[in-house]
Length: 51
Image (cartoon, rainbow, N blue to C red; front, top):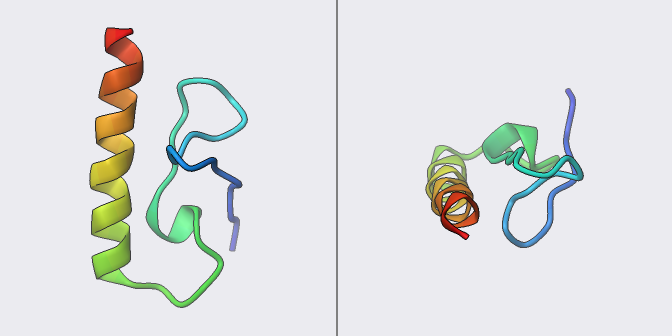
């Protein structure tokens, strides 16, 4: 499937667009990893809106 490249903050090359889980990982699908990455991407997205 499609995999987007993200930086350490889970942000894609398009500012303000974040990716997590299967969309950001080419490896083995994992609910645990997707949940953690989604939570972190949400935190980073919120931080970017506050600055």
